[in-house]
Amino acid sequence: MGGMLAVAAQLAPAYSSPLVGADECDGTESALGSKDFLDGGPGRSRNPPICSTMSAGNSLLSFSLGAAAGVAACGTLYWALNKQAQPKPSAETSRNEVNGSFPEPVVEPPKEAEPPADPPAPPPAAPEDRPADAPESCPGVSSEQAGKSESCAGCPNQALCASGEAKKKDPAVADIQDRLKSVKRKILVLSGKGGVGKSTVSAQLSFGFSGRGMDVGLLDVDICGPSVPRMLGLLGQDVHQSSEGWSPVYVDDHLAVMSIGFMLPNQDDAIIWRGPRKNGLIKQFLTDVNWGELDALIIDTPPGTSDEHLSIVTYLQDAKVDGAVIVTTPQEVSLMDVRKEINFCRKVGLPVLGVIENMSGFACPKCGHEERIFCPSTGGAMAMCQQMEVPYLGSVPLDGRVAAAGDQGMPLSQLQPDGPVAKCIDKVIEAILKETDKK
Image (cartoon, rainbow, N blue to C red; front, side, top):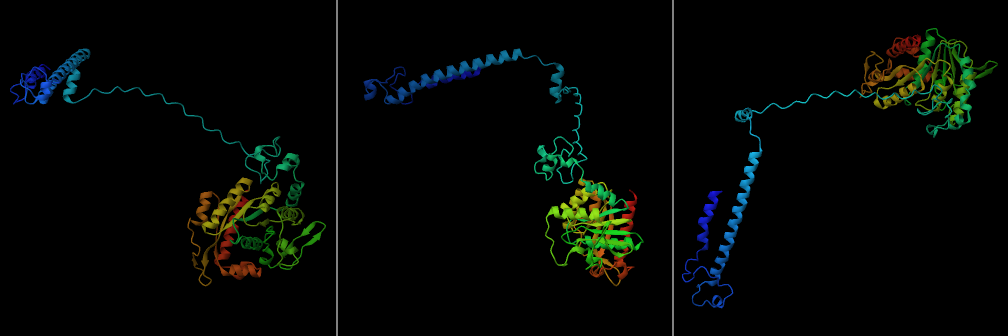
């Protein structure tokens, strides 16, 4: 700082001296505002404006240097006071700085782990008296909130539950239980969509069971599309009424069949019924048909999940249904509907006996070699069964003789008893018997 002041003192006289060439200027008197300054008279500088400007500049420079010296002095004083206020570093700190190392950081002790939060409570279990077509939040028909709860809005049973009639069990359920008490196995055949061969499988399973000497009944509840009479060669047959109810139509001594197709005056007539009327006929089939003693009753249902399925499950709730067999094809378009069908069965409490993959490949009629026709894009029915955790009953190849057997109403075993399709049907029957015997 002292050096800076010395330099400033040496520079001050230089800036205070007159300009070179202004030999008549005394350097002390300002000519600003005098007449001689304006006229450039004697005793004044030959350049009066420049001289006066330098005089003003000398004054400004002197003031600036003084201010700078004051600021520098204040800064020096502040630095000295701040230096004294800081603690003197220890020898250890100085040594660490020289060596380029730093003291070890202070490690805080770990905080105690908070106890884990309690897991969320599981959702309340569904009431046992919830109707099959009710929403999952149904309070149950025996609840005081039946038909009055917010979850009842939009339910088809709301008016029935609110009136209290739903608490009363349908007397038809007891009648059906009594009618089917002599039936050992009750098997539903389902499909996610139409055209996958559900009725064909139902017919060939019925032929296969009866071919083993078992007494079998086949009930066709596909009201709008009855095809069982054609597939069993019973077109033109009639249903007879007796004192014990409706008598089914018999294919032979071991196979009895009931279908709305036997009641149509013309096989080409369309059945255009609403849900309640179809449900009424299904109830009448289950209560009035005199099956007698059966080893197995196979129920061929319409595709999808409709009113007919809900009615069957409701009416058979006390009849101890063994389960459902679901028919599909290898394509994902069919499998995606089968997944819905499986979820439907789980919601209504219907066991799934297994899945049959129909048209899984083409069987050569000469050598029996099978070739894939509908290549599965997601692994087929077997992969789907593993994913959904349901049994895989087997596959049935695509064979023209199966269609011929259905058109002629004959069992496949008569057309080609040792063919690949007949063998596959036998394996499926064995798997179904194995699953039903577990119960």
